[in-house]
Image (cartoon, rainbow, N blue to C red):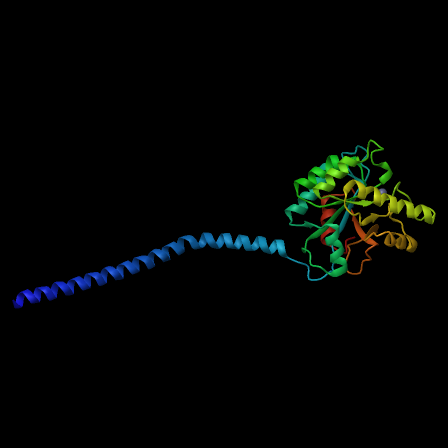
Length: 290
Ligand SMILES: [Zn+2]
């Protein structure tokens, strides 16, 4: 009897020990598994996170204030010009510049974003740029528009209203509508590329007002901007544009826009169509470019 009881106690003790060991092992196994899993997954997770954070940073580097400014580029025609007129840029060269902007994380601003940046110090990405075209040539639709779409860029085209649907080298109203629906913005370049300093007060009002109404009819959107033909204007031109509801006026005065810029006298950055890409790079990275 004594032996039997001893054996029962021994077996019970063994069972308890066994369960204990199993339980310990099971716990250990789970923990080891967990560590292994973490070690296996962590580097991958880290890389992805770092990459994501990097992208987030690059996308969200905002200018602290609007004192440094941003460049507003202006182009005219985009096509292969055998005469190599400097106001014309080759399509491939234009594409090279747009690709450079894309590859270097530049963001293109709308007119509203530009307005709010200058007027209200609203934050914009550090690498912001505004793209504009003067005159409204048909090659803006044929050659520039596909490239802007390719890079998902915003831009504004300043149109000479009387030439729309009237000249074979000029934009047609259905092309303006199509681009506007896509998100390209349109501004006035007067009715007939008028020198605003050379015409009567009445004619000035007419050309500023009718060109605006004309574009609003086509696009069904408010027209808030004008580029002064030949880049010329004076105080009475500024008063007239302001009275007619224009919020932004684009000049050919050299430089970046910043908090000192007048909304109706915005500076722009010109790039000679024959200049090498280095000139372009300098003008969009250095507010005090030569
Ligand atoms: Zn012009």
